[in-house]
Length: 298
Image (cartoon, rainbow, N blue to C red; front, side, top):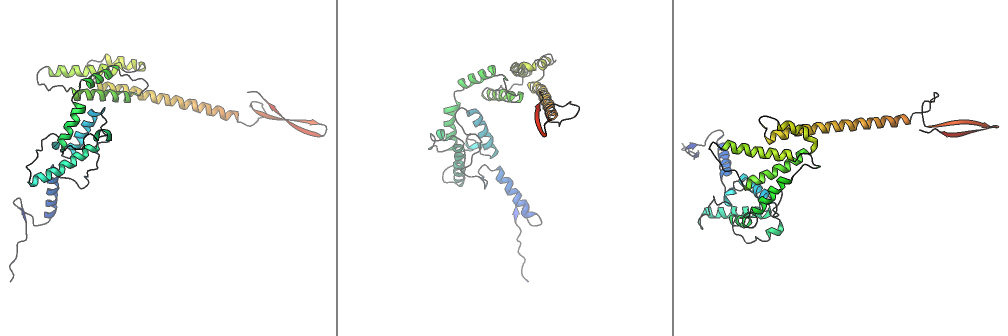
């Protein structure tokens, strides 16, 4: 009688024989791959662009923020902030690190405009490439801070919608916060600082609105306590939508009246003479009947 051979596989102290064992192993491998910064998905390739708008120089803030989000989503942010250290040469880890480092470097270069990317062809690591970009575009924030503050102080709604005006203003606020974040504080003054920050933004938003919103602006300013800027925007936006509906309704009435007037002018001739337009008048000359057109003035 042949001796039975145990073909079961033990993984992490657990026997993998039985229903669902292969599925559990596959699930575990997938989970470990997603947690592994050296893992590259089958769809990853050196020609990928991780951001929609490439770096042109003037958009460094938004570009750097978008790149951090994209690299973080792929667990590759550690290659540019040195959280993933370079392993010793000759090890298996070094080969894996080099492969992923080249991939991340390619992604960054693909996300830079060609005029700028031509200046960085010989950078050896993703970290070195990012350091060069920061030195060129991100180190001196003084002029950029000045420009942002100037734009905030001079921005107004103008001919734009409330939504577009608020979006522009919020983007400036976010850029300013990114460059000058409020330091964390657990003291009693933290709430007062946050309230002052909210108050400044509310005033900046209300000051840039058109005169059409004087009524709702006055109502917001007398609220106690003052609402947040997001709440104020919601109130103003509601007024703006009501105005759009009212304008569309009036335009529809005007069009309907014009259409009815046009229809009346095309009515056929009636014997009571109440219509206006072209009529025909018959006359007799001898035995010849002629028809003349009489134009009745409108």
